[in-house]
Image (cartoon, rainbow, N blue to C red; front, side):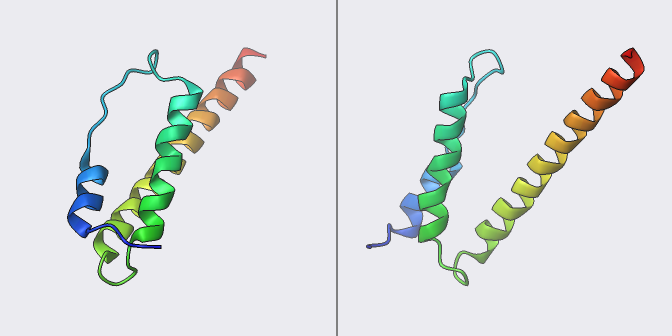
Length: 81
């Protein structure tokens, strides 16, 4: 498999997509997530360490927020019972 030039990969990674919760559907969300896999696979563990570290940090932050949302919802349900 040939590697894309770093500039192309970084340009693709830096594209900002603005969307609202209402405009986001499950399919498009999964497409965005799936689009990261080829990018990450093409990254070089040493040369692209900074971006890999940032992606990992962002993924952990996202997982944390998801967990907080779920915990808030669980507390709301428990109080409402």
